[in-house]
Length: 406
Ligand SMILES: [Cu+2]
Image (cartoon, rainbow, N blue to C red; front, side, top):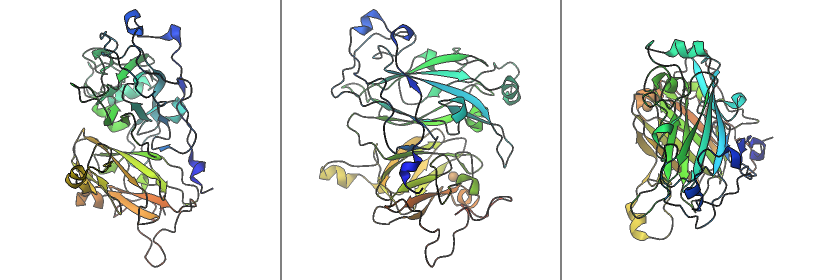
């Protein structure tokens, strides 16, 4: 069962933009062709594995899709005539952290698949996405996380990088949050690059902005965050995408040491605690700076171009010569960037460390593994033929951590 084909994850449950349910259509706007999208064929075949266990990805947009200059409204930013795609997102409470007993919350495309990080969102420039957030977090939990009794109870969806109006801001001051038991639709627009606008292609994140206080600090700390990638039309699509959020308490995706890597050596299931790829696959990381500390993102054996996509395409010598190739990148709070490379490129399968290079962070467990399988999908033995078996990610491992997670 080592074939990565076994890893295919359930995909977004997305519903077509049915006419009567349109939130945002306007008669003027409908005159403008935004994008030609195959609304119902969003589930691709094959193995794009996502850290959150699921991904919400768009259909390919038609080449030459036109973006209209539709006037903005309260609900939708300029250029978004109507959502090209809709999906539901649930905020739920998850089992407490097994090490710290902290509350854990998660976003999921279904309540049953909620995770931290939440599902990775993928958009293509020109696309307008409507996400209906359902708040299923128990009132008592939100009350316990609240730092000020006057602060309203709720969860929200706040996004970086793409365009949205105040109604989709996800904050309390404009009422764009979801009270317990409620629902609210947020609209994100991946504005394309134009002569006067830089566009929105890039690596971003989304998160709560309400739980506990006006900045959602308790929501972020509890797990209400996820990655977003906006691609430019024609961008190479990776085979696998992982989110690594580097956060406080020396955590990666809120876990550290052995908890950060729970890959089963026989049947590794990609997810927030299992980074795995087959040699030769294009792997993408969405790296998020979570919390209050500075970090660096470093991967052993692999490097990438310090560009929007991690690559320099084409034969432009000046561009090639002036683009640094790096294997370590600094990450501040709220920063996001993306990295792409070919797994095992010239270095072969194996267990490659991925860690923060602030030494006291990595020593305290801010470290995990990227497992690169061979071409047949077989997991190589940890440690190789002669080397000792490596310890669990980070050293020393905390009490209770299994020392050899393989
Ligand atoms: Cu760090």
